[in-house]
Amino acid sequence: MSANILWDSLWLNVHLACMTEGYGEIRDAAIAVKDGKIVWLGQQGNLPAGYSASKTHDGKGCWLTPGLIDCHTHLVYAGNRSNEFEARLNGVAYEEIARQGGGIISTVRATRAATEDELLAQTLPRLHAMLAEGVTTIEIKSGYGLDLETEARILRVARRIGNEFPVRVKTTFLGAHALPPEYAGRADDYISLVCELMLPALMTENLVDAVDVFCEKIGFSPAQTERVFQAAQARGLPVKLHAEQLSDQGGAALTARYQGLSADHLEYLSGAGISAMAASGTVAVLLPGAFYFLRETKYPPLAELRAAGIAIALATDCNPGTSPMTSLLLTMNMACTLFCMTPLEALQGVTCHAARALGIESETGSLEVGKAADFALWAITRPADLAYHIAANPSQARVFAGKLLA
Ligand code: DI6
Ligand code: FE
Image 1 (spheres, rainbow, N blue to C red):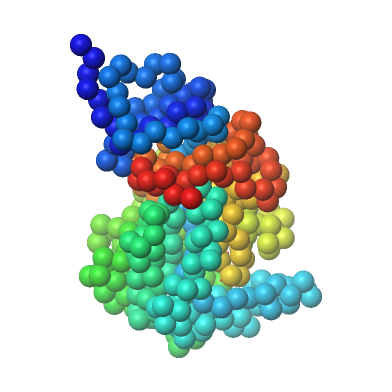
Image 2 (cartoon, helix red, strand yellow):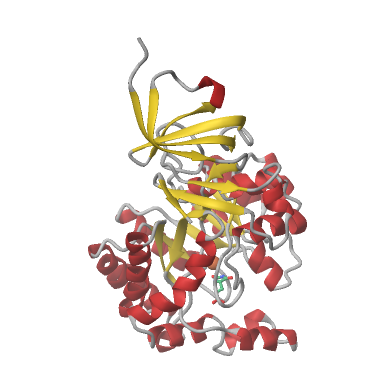
């Protein structure tokens, strides 16, 4: 007597890259969905007797991967900084532009002046560009407000994106991104504002999933960073950090001490930071777009990260100053071409490892029964194609929570 199995949808004639062990390849496969979750996957010839599906899709030989996860973005902001791009090409260093009140602060001025609807309107083209490349989860940081009203507005826009569009959004409070002009010379006072006023107020609106800091000479010190981490930990929020981007501040080791989800950038990461991250399980998020755009010359210590068994994730770092890009596929190619990561490491970096960097590995990031039916279909010959092509987009379809989207 065959079981009476009713699925909501079934994908046939696909090759799966489950991203469980290595690629986790299953060729000539099928995958079934019910109530937004994966309920069966395997070789098509092994489909259980007695199944039926309300909707059956022909994958036409496409590869099907977990939906891509962009685990580090500053997606919500107003304005544009191509003028600084031009200035740097005329010899002005990024840190010098920041010291002259340009950089992050110029985007802060534009963002403070924008309404919530204007911020959403300026963000949507960037969002749609990401979704067109099979992205199903995006982390969105605040950090261009630097006052409670604007930080809240950015995070409300981030929440609206998750509520109004077919994508999972995880929000990160990055109030400690830069010192606002009104606190010039008073960084400790500003950190008090971040910890004692902004964070509690944003939490009352449920706007914060994690907390981040820019720990750098032109950002905040390790001591100031630790104050923010203590405030986050006191409220049960996980932390992550912009760490060792332009110098070694010991930020990665500090993040590991707080069991941080991830330490991000890491061009100047030291052995002490690596050992600490390996012990705590903190994910290394590499951001080749910022490395490339800043023409950085110090490479993140990939061999040491590998040797330490640290999970390596990748993200666009989409932001107007150092990484004005929305393409995770190009990010994958840059990670291979610039950092010498393998195509497998690159795909792990935007799926299973990126999920760990957001603390959502139980929900998504790999194709496994019980996880969200978030996946992307690709017209490729093998998974390595995703990192191989430059500025090509082989995406054929995107499925979020079991729903097929263009
Ligand atoms: N590091 C970065 O590269 C971005 N933020 C940060 O902490 C730059 C942000 C900007 O320049 O607007
Ligand atoms: Fe960033």
